[in-house]
Length: 95
Image (cartoon, rainbow, N blue to C red; front, side, top):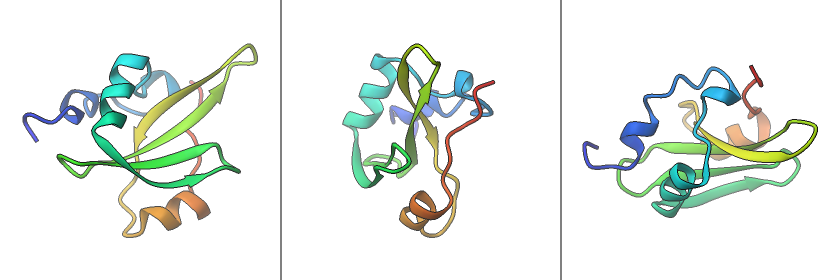
């Protein structure tokens, strides 16, 4: 995990959207090194797994009222992350 792209991103607190992984550079690197596991069109969310460390990332959409932007946060350990995405997942609170 020391050489994984997720290491620095996992230092965020992920309590709110503002503390999630945002920005093209960080998100693009994490997503490029991950595989898509599942997608929920109703929730505007996707679930990825890092090919290096196995961290599962949820990608969600936040609308500020003026624009939509996507962000990443670690999916909670659930034993079945695909079920979590479809049945329980929700985006982070805005602030």
